[in-house]
Length: 400
Image (cartoon, rainbow, N blue to C red; front, side, top):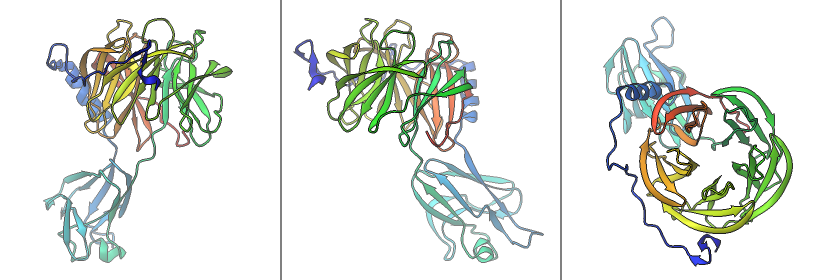
């Protein structure tokens, strides 16, 4: 298995590395950083669906919820509010008045608001305990209100690189259904224009970007999940020039990124095994496999998202994300060896980390975030691991 090939010797196994700072503690954030964290948390907070609770005076409807039913995705939040009157929001059977304990606002006089986030798929009926036996929704509309939660749509394939050599990072989108690629040219967080790239053959996906032929523009790194074969398509901006087959991955491993790990000016493969949480580096000469080395093993709950140089020492570092907590972290590397680590800013609920790249031309990587429910993207501008500011980026189409 090539994952173990290191110049003809068996790779030594790395012990798990704890995500700790070089100083052994998390530094206190500055007041400015804390203010930005609060502002960005509001700016990028998960979008809530709103339901208005009304006594219905003068409407002929009686007390009611508006809208009656709400359709959301897993992880979304519903917010109920009433300006006056006395109401409650109780999950359970409105016909019998039996609560199921999933959410309960308690009885409150207006103005009041109550929110609940839904972590799982299902239909969640609810009622107002004050008006259930009077003229609330069940008698007026013949049905009880509910929140209907479906699985979030799959996240898009979003990769980052500078395709038109204008000093700004661009988006590369890939549609698994049509196999089309598209490049969105950005100026910071603003979409300037777009162009279709080459369409991939059946069974293949674009999984990474790097300049393999050293012509100053990124090339596509392709992967076939059935054969586990890789390939490189050489591009001139959005135009396909030629292609070459790369090495085949062992079963269970994912290709996360292509980056120059050994500083020979040639991209290498960075691999991750989600089952064992082991990482590895395959050193390449063009598309030819030379040898490999095992990298650090990630702690439980963490995944490897991207590889970028965060400490400006020309060595690529691991960008990690914990989907359960929203926490990010950087593992500083020297080749395939981890030499230190630090926590980055935590993401708001509902957002995932898609990658890192320099979006404001300060030579320092920034975070790219994605919200599945709205398909919005966002840029978090960083100074190392310090959050400076943020801005919403373009919203991705449903076709990608």
